[in-house]
Image (cartoon, rainbow, N blue to C red; front, side, top):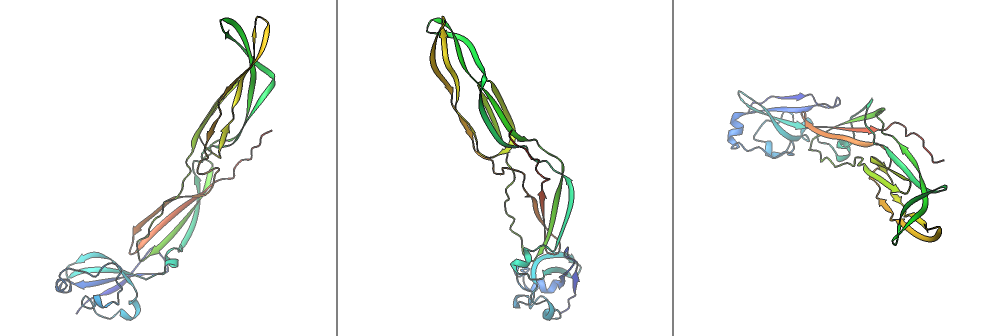
Length: 266
C-alpha cells in the first residue's frame, strides 16, 4: 500500500505535525469512514489506511483533521500528543505597549454638614407664611478620571492536539452613582467603585412663623450602590481565541493597567 508522510510546520517552533497521504482505494475500502478525531496514529483503526513506516516515531500522535485532497486520495493531519499541563503552558510569551481605556474610579464619597452655611427657604406652615431652616451639606470626592495612557499587553501562545475549552473571563463593568442632598448634587455616569452609601440627610431643623421658631425635623432617605465587579484598575484577559493551524493554536491577551494615581480626602 503506497503512501507518503511528511512533517509540517506548526506555530510552535519546537515541534512539527505529521501529514499523511492516504490513497483513494483505502478511503473506499473503509466506506469513506475515518477513525474519529483523537485516535492515535499507531492505533489499529488506522491499519488499513497507511503503512507502518512512521509508526515507531509517531505512534502517539493524535489525529485531528483531514487536510487537502490530492489526485490520488487525501491527507490526514496528526499532532503530537500532549499532557494537559503541556497544553496549558504557553510556548511563547511576548509583550507590547499600547493604548487602552480604563474606566474612572470613585474611591469614596463623604457627606458633611456645613455649620457655617445653613439653608433657609420660605414656604407655608399650616395656612401661614413660614421660613424654614436646615443644614447645608458639602461632599468630598475621591475620584480618579478615566485614562487612556499606555498599557502593557502580554500575549501568550499555546499549541495543542485537542480543542481548547475557552473560559469566560471577568471584565470591568462600571455603573453610575448619583447623589442629591441639601446644598449639593452630582453624579458619576460610569465608574468603578466599592459599595457606596449615601446617608440619610436632614432637610429641615426649624420653622419660623411670625418670628416664633419651632423645631421641626425633615429628612431625605439614604441610598446605596453595590460595588462593581472591579473596584480599581487591575489586569484582565482582553481576548482568548483559537484557530486551526496544523493543530489547535490559541492566543490569549492580557492587559495590565498603568499605575493608579494617588488620591486622598483632605
